[in-house]
Image 1 (cartoon, one colour):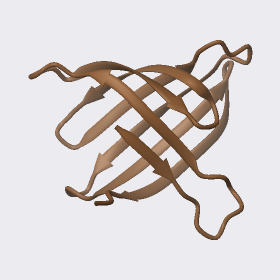
Image 2 (cartoon, rainbow, N blue to C red):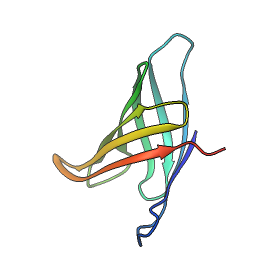
Image 3 (tube, rainbow, N blue to C red):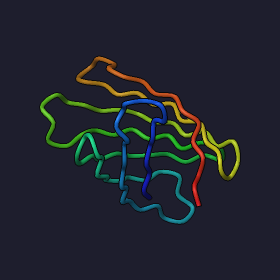
Length: 104
């Protein structure tokens, strides 16, 4: 899966993520690795439900011990709501909320 987050009307740089992972049929848990445009190489795990995807991740080779979580709630086949947070060590350093639309 490939994602790109754009921030129209903002000077914030786009964030792109390229995920690789495996989800066996009938399973609701998975692991993944991703290449993040700002964090570098990341590992994580996720859980699927009927209306949400919940993920937690950690940045590899990072002395700051950055980690985070993301929850994607499904409104319909094209729209999702994202709530996420990032931690450095044990401190919450950023949060993000967004409505996402699938392109194509």
